[in-house]
Image (cartoon, rainbow, N blue to C red):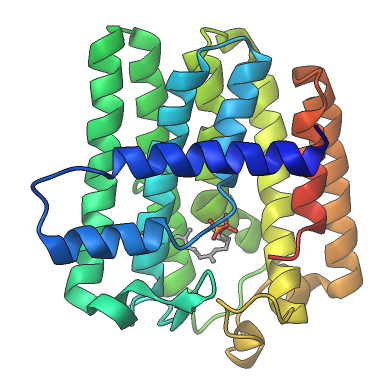
Amino acid sequence: MNFNQMLLQKQSIVNKRLNELLDISGIPEVLHNSIKYSVEAGGKRIRPILTISITEALDGNILDALDFGCAIELIHTYSLIHDDLPAMDNDDFRRGKPTNHKVFGEAIAILAGDALLNFAIEILSQKAINNNNLNYIKAINEIFKASGARGMIAGQTIDITSENRILSLDELYKMHSLKTGAIIEASCTVAAYISGREDRLEEIKQFSQHLGIAFQIVDDILDFVGDEKKLGKTVGKDLKSNKATFVTILGLDEAKMKAQEHTKKAIEIANGLDKTGFLSKLTEYLLVREN
Ligand code: GRG
């Protein structure tokens, strides 16, 4: 199997498991539809694929890693639903489809995001109970530290409160390392806990930090270039609002160079982590992706 086939296979495994996890009774119909609408709207499933791939490389339990990764994907989806709300980024499209609040209204979109976060906690705590495993509790702790007020929510707060002020490059790094980087890092580090390989934690952290920065720089570049395939974004919005991005601060060429540098460093570490080469190819794919 080549890399693209492996990626598609992993995406389809994640999608199937997400489907099963969300096939629950007892939820008001409109809420269930709203949750499924956003989870099934697509997405690259990068975070769960990182969790599964690193766990595989460390000889950990892949099925448990799949559930950890899917729970992280639910948290990611909640963050996107809330980020799109009029009170936040006020976006009409996400993943090429109308945003959740455009279809279901703001109140249901807020509740769907809340429900997704709570589902994630339910799925993960059930895993820890079933396995009676302290390492799983440590992994859960990492995930919610990363998504909470000292992680993703801190980053989102910095982003929102700095709207009328241009951030410096250091501030931009800091904001993104919290807003996007923390969850990407947790998607990777949980693999060390699931596999009982805390000895690899530092290496995985280094890998995920380079990957997270490269990922965000590429996101800014794609936004800037306004690729036609990127239907879910308002092209040029950041430029019009004078918002700092890696492209507005560094310029397009230097931003591309920085993304390449961080990708190169991530790949060097990935080669030591995963002998199959999938992780380094995934890292390369994130650099050259078109959405
Ligand atoms: C509302 C608490 C709260 C937080 C929102 C992550 C986030 C914080 C906002 C998303 C804003 C954004 C578009 C950031 C750029 C990087 C990013 C996270 C892109 C989307 O992630 P992908 O590319 O998306 O993995 P898919 O659709 O593939 O899942």
